[in-house]
Length: 335
Image 1 (cartoon, rainbow, N blue to C red):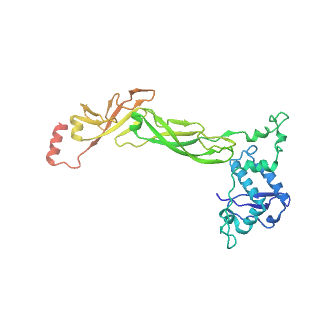
Image 2: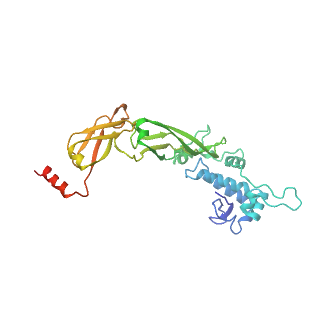
Image 3: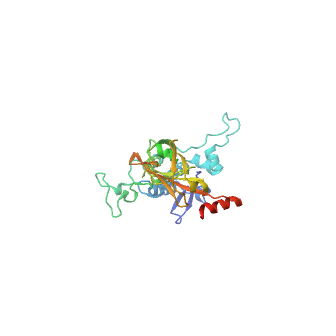
């Protein structure tokens, strides 16, 4: 995000704010020439209003940082002069010096990133929040909850992510390592840095779709928030042979009409690569199925036990019959 530094009138001549939104100009008409005292008044007002100890707005931390950066630039005549003449690009990218200089460009401005430093240097040893504390430093229980009644730390909503697993993963169990990127507080306890972290999930045999794995407080860190929990929700990948319902597996076997009427043996390759030979001694009709106990998915509460395998049949009818075959079928089925 790029930041611009501007002063503009909000409530007449006495109420001025620092505008740190992206995509504007440094100041509107007359803004650049306002006295230092007015700039200090503006910073005092906005810094107190947006301090993370007082504001519960989602973007308060970043707004507080932007206000500090704006004041850091506008309160320094050199920085402000560079910005007024060359804009943000010149301020942050550097400007050309006079010819003959050994270094043809100045070093660009970089904010130190610590808004609390600006805040405490501005207010000195005074505590701008004194009105909210008693003589012993305890928080005053005011009508609206005191200083932290509105700014009390609360946890961000949980972050939910789908975790797609194959039936083999869920049959045997496995370990999944997932890299996340999150904001981590720096030593100053206010600024943050994006860092990667590896989360490890030990998938247990028999986990069902919808199983939730929670990593507590692994979301973005911030000075006035409790990091969100990250929750992974198990989703099953489509399988080329089986369909799962709870702890049972369903298999569809294609069979020609002749075998459906005259008995057959069905071969089923299991998830653990065994080959089952299931004899079918019944006449197979469109609603017929065969139940094979104990050949389903492991039960999450006791993986030594398993659900069942259900075999359904897709009966393949012939598309053409010779007159002789038709006559034979009539004799076999209708007599």
